[in-house]
Length: 332
Image (tube, rainbow, N blue to C red):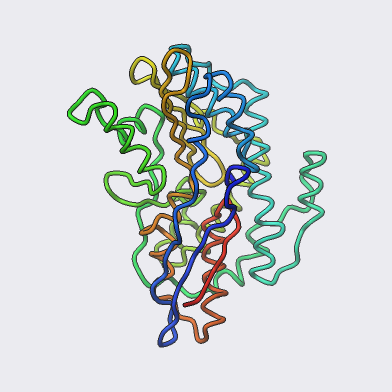
């Protein structure tokens, strides 16, 4: 999921280097949120426009928008049919394959696999896909993270997400307060008051190899292993239909959840008289690059013998968390 078209398209990260370690990692100014562009529009127009606001993951954005708006109108959509499942699965594989065929080889000095990506994008063919065997040796040479990991994001359906993020919308908050709270959460989401980590590692956290790497504090390697596992599973057609659903918590309100390569994508909407009154999108990148999130947590204290080594390690760490936009990294 990329930034909405026409807005800033990079994530700003900064850090310091002191005594051979990364110090004071920080996330820059919050990114512009696309959901505000949907407010005030007819609901049908919003469903059409939503996927066009993003240069990546348009299928997931469109599915989430349609389902959230339909739920808000009291007409929930059925589970994804075979064609929609295939589209969402292909998009998810494409995101994983881009990282594994091009970006990770650049970071770990392994041969790129452009042909594999081209074959998948053009023909849907599995051709010489990169896998864990290509990356394991250099990935395991990365230094372990110094601090304890943030909790990995739980797997929640749309109903549970509404309860976790919004609580009782008829309670003491009142509806307006609830939506103000959700808008703030979209920029820096938390669950039960805590930042979490989203993505393949969260979905594969019970896999023995991923769990072992995680326990050893080799979290970039664990994320990479989980991504390889997931791409192999998806390439074999193992896509979970429970990754897409919606909930109708109150008249005029809908929430939809679509799992993406980077984690759960949430669309929350309120409609009135056929128009969008409020719209909130909680994207996976906002979890992993929360001001107190996984990047900041894992970068702090990483050993780096030189300032350039600090920058290189931070770029690798950021890649392991799979931002949906380009990263601008500065060393104070």
